[in-house]
Image (cartoon, helix red, strand yellow):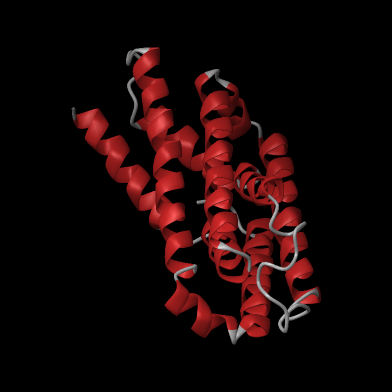
Length: 206
């Protein structure tokens, strides 16, 4: 029971902390659609399952202990976030006069899932969070079925939290007011992702 409470508490605190996942869900649900935001949240949950899977088979320990491998992962993640940020800055306000649902490619289910998945799976801070959680909190003697249950809980917690964020930012009252600032919002989220990527590239993971 103590282990379960620790996993739940640490997971909830980690999920609600701001980061690239929050930025992408907020942006997609606000500027694209509620469906896009929720599907981005589902993609994030799928990315969490990847982290959990390689942690349970022991690859997570290798990533944590191999400096070059972790550095490579960090570089790829930073590059992806900076790429997303630059893309947002380049296209900021391009469709400001159009409906937020007018671009089918941007709002396709696959596109929304993919961006959520890649944003999470390429984030080395998520790697460190999940690997550390299973190494320092979960007892090695805990049955594998229970550990899998923990992993599913972590993924579901991410989906539920970010789906709630999507619902908030796509609520008609909030959405209508903020869409007037669409150009500035795209620039703000673009700059935020570039900042996340830059910090990831130059700072050590604590």
